[in-house]
Picture (spheres, rainbow, N blue to C red):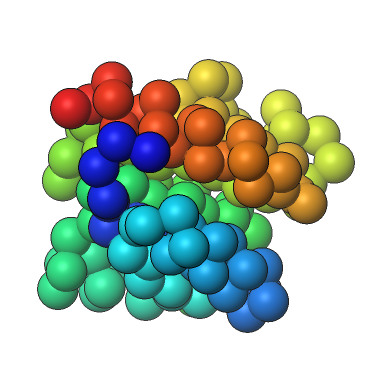
Length: 121
């Protein structure tokens, strides 16, 4: 890992969000957890994240809405989609943002975060 980032983890499954958040914290990042799109938008407005990891299907504002609003504010904000959907094509995304299937390989997630941070830097 090059530099510590503030990463917003958005998932309506508390266990999934906390596992990712705790892993990122152990890797030296600062993780903020939100359990839906609206909560994530409020959190990001108050304390902007350097990178966002979001699920797609969530009550309280889904991932599509969250990504659209975040990208309106900052088209370059790195975003990673993490979803349990069987057909990844159903997410509505091609390669941007990148999509990882649940359960997430945390090593792959961190490698992706490092690549995206280096690219944006």
